[in-house]
Amino acid sequence: MSEIDSYEIPPLLDDKKREELYGPEMDPLLAQLFYNREITDPETVNSFFEFDWSGIHDPFLLKDMGKSVDRILDAIEKNEKILIYSDYDTDGIPGGAVMYDFFTKIGYKNFSNYIPNRNTEGYSLNMSACEGFVSDNVELIITVDCGITDSEEIAFLMNNDIDVIVTDHHLPEGDVPAAYAVIDHKQDNCDYPDPNLCGAAVAWKLVCALITTGKERKIQEFTDTPEGWEKTLLDLVAISTVCDMVPLVGENRLLVHFGKIILSMSPRPGLHTIFKKARLNQKALQTDDIAFMIGPRINAASRLDDPMIAFTALAKDGAEAIAAAEMLEKLNNRRKSLTAKIMKEVWGKLDERPGSPVIVIGNPEWPLGILGLIAGKIADRMKKPTFVWGRVGDEIKGSARSGSNISVFSLMQHVRDSFSGFGGHAASGGFETDGEKIHFLEEELAKKVDAAERITEDKIHIDAKLTINQINVTTHKLVHKLEPFGMGNKKPLFLIDEVVTSVREFGKTGNHIELKFLNARGKFIKATAFFREDLIAKGIKQGDTVSIIGSIEKDSYNGYEYVTIRLVDVLI
Image: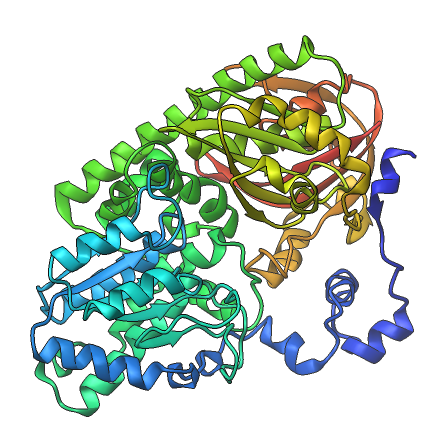
């Protein structure tokens, strides 16, 4: 199979069909992009050009919203001890900051934020923490981006006179927990019109409902809150929506659009520091900046240290937030350095090992928080199911990635006796085992590879074939009419056949690549890819005729803006 067989180019939209669907005025390339995404009805097409706030749905459409608002307002009136329990990732941390900003804005002081440690407590509520909340006389817990599967922990809390309001966006596992209230649009009998909100967006909906009701009831702390203040929280919601990889369609598209506007003028000192360290232009942030520059810095806190560092950077003011953001930069740099060091160790070990249809590799010293990153890198290169482990106390814990058409979840099901626990889905998962069984895990998994379910391998869609002369400002403007890009609305990819004018490898370790091409106007068009040793290994040379696949970007340098190509692949 040739490399191009991994890609799919849709049929070209002919002039007659284009005019019938989109009218004669629409540019052919823009029409093709809509057609490729199966967007043909005028209302949806128009929504890409007009961002209408009326598309933000009423929060009271969420099941249990009214009940939750009443309980929280009652807790505020009685000065009850409230705890916000959020997840440790790029959805839960900003979501926890949303709730922190709300309580701070209304002047409520008897509350605190809690984020579990990824490496020692794991995801969502845990019994040890819950026992501590009982001892601390907490009276109300509001979860953010977690809780929907924590029936045992929530029953314990409720039985100990702590009311729990769950706000989450994950699927329930069986019956929803017997909490005081559950706000989750994935639960049965919830009529909320958009199924794709992230956890922080659900928390923001709760804040919106609280402010609306507080103003209606003429509670002073709420009437003193400026009209529309809740919109200033959309910088946090946009970060979560992009980084949690929920579909950027429908309401999410609006939340990210308006959230990027708030981000462009956000006064948060921690964010300012992150922008500066990441060399981002706050006034011109793109979704890729959020996903690949801001997100990893937030995640670095829980991967290698305390997730409250990221929370402080987002939620707090002044020197405290700046110091936390600077620590995030150090942790992110450490994460990159540690990952590179471990990968060097990994490739050395794998070179010495006999071939196997499955890879199991680990080290008691490897931090749990980066095992998923390591597994992903191995699986991407080796194209095999990969299981990477580390040690936490007396337990062996790890992450799995498919790297192939084999479902790692199905594979784990076939050797369930090898694990003390496991979960996930076809492409990725997590597992726990003991120090004895880990030594035989690769052998046991290899025996069951043929029995595991297969994943349908989707081809990567290319939107159109262009010439190098079409890589210009006009094309960039057309393409970016479909912003914001993300899951459910992927950035358009293009195929370009051209002769390479020059090749340059750059970066500290030479793992970035830049190709240059000459257009008909005598100007060079650059195409770049970062951390792509696989492309460098292809040995591309000056004078080669190649097919490049990539997206059209706009870069700025020394005050100048120019259009470039972000490489996805190079076919020789």
